Structures are given as structure tokens and as C-alpha cells.
Image 1 (cartoon, rainbow, N blue to C red):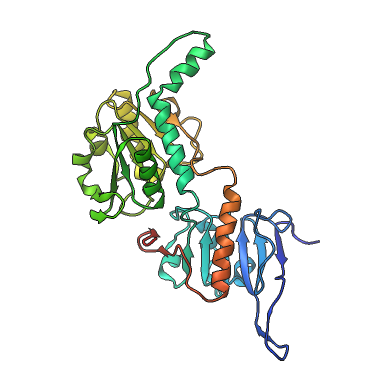
Image 2: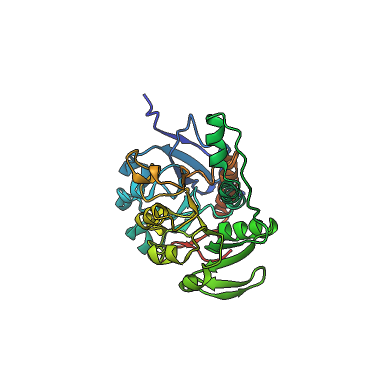
Length: 345
């Protein structure tokens, strides 16, 4: 009886020369997370020159031994790492995520295997979600919800965004989309990245090392940084202390970037106007974690990018990448495995 966790779908066609001989064997793409009976929407059919195999973690050596490429749909890097020695044919891994901190492991970094991500798919949705979190505080929605629950007709004032300042920390696709949207609603927006540089759209990208001078006077600070060796824990007590007392922090990047203990201390001491956090060091956030109960903190369960239709958008990107790879053309969204992110648009 076939294993329902593992199956193979043959390609629609193969490459044939003029005399009817097969020129090249179909390349095998292992889809980690999903089954042939329930593949990611939009993935099928396999294009000519490729075939899909499907497996759910825990993986086996046999799953990786025949794979030329891997689509990490729901799996993580540790699922592949455990069987890395068996992946002798592997040439390409595509992550159905923007961040790749959960995908990279030392053997992959040291190898010649190309890693690509889903950069661009989540940009606009995450920018809109960041704006929604900011509006939650600008309109004091939590007070309205409590008043409704208690059947109290209690009015309070909205604090318009226009004319205030926002600092977006992270100048990748999501950070730029966020800065673009915030400018459109009237916020003076400053964009911060690892290094300072002139920018044709924003005039200037400022250096993260200068945050202590950049943060004062800003109403909102939005973190959109990937988790790398440089960024982990980079936004801590010193940066929180440089923010204005009524400023709001939003993190839609990676939980490892933010010192959560320092955030809890700042909020409990009343040194911040509030915070909305979509990403955490431990996910799912344990029920007994103190972050659930901190006044002024909105806990969002890592869903900034979960817009309606995102699965189809991910598969549209992957299928375009797969066609490119089968044609032996250069892939897009290639991750610099040393730095942990895509370094070019």
C-alpha cells in the first residue's frame, strides 16, 4: 500500500531529440510538506522536464537521495540537515518564505547548493499589516473594544498619522514597501539598513549604527530585519531607551532581532507608548509567556504575511523559478548564504 505521506507525480513530458531519444532525464523536485493527494494549490501539473515527489517530515534518506531540487513548503532546514549526506544530487533549494533563518544550516552554507526565497510575495501585505498595527494605537482601538464589551459609550481622540515620523529598520523589499506606504499616508519616513547609502527613491538610507540619533522624535519604529548573525538581539535596551516615551514599536521582521526582556521592562516602566509584535523568539508563544500579559503590548501570532491568496502567489513564483531552472537560466531571489538574505533586487 502506498505511503500517503510520500508519493511521486511524473512530468507531463520529457525532452526528446529528433530521433526520438531522451536527451535528459526529468529532474526530481522534492516538495517537503504536503502530499500528492493534497499538494500546494497551484503547484500541479509538473512542467515538462520535471517530476515532483512529496514527503512530510520526518524525512528519510530515501526522500533526499533522488532529489535534484527541494521546495520547502512547510518544512524547515533542520528536516533537510538531518539527511544532508544522502542529498548527493541536490543543486537547488527554494524556500516558500521570505526569511531563511530557519532554512540555513552550516553544511548548506558551505555547499554549492543554490538557495532562493520568496522575496516580493509578501511585501505589500506586510506593509499594510504594519500600518494596521500602527492605526490600532493611533485610534486606541483596544479602549474602544473594552468599552463595547462593558457597554460604555466612551469617546476618545484619534491621533492622526500625517505629519508624524516613522523609522523603518530594514531596507529589503518588505521594508521599502512599508516605508513607501507610510509616506503615502503622510508620515515622514526614514529608512534604516546595515550601511548608509544614497537611495534614488528615499533620498538616503541611514545606518543602523546611528539608531541612537535617529530614533528620538519618531512616533513609530517598525522592525523589518531578517535574523542574521549581525541582527540578532540588535534592538535592545539601548535602542528602546532612545525612543520617545509615547512612541510605538512594531516588529514584523524576526523575533530574534528584538530583546524581548528589555521590551517587557520598557513597557512595564511606562517608557513606551505601546508595541505590536508579530514575531517572537519562541513560536508558538507559550501560554505562560509573560508577553501575553504585558500592558500596552499587542501580540500578533506571526500572520503579517498571511494574506488571502498568498499560497497561489507563492506557487506562481516557484513555478516561474522552476521553469527558469529547467532552462538552465539564472535564478532570481538567490540568497547570499553567508549574510542570510538576498542582496540584490
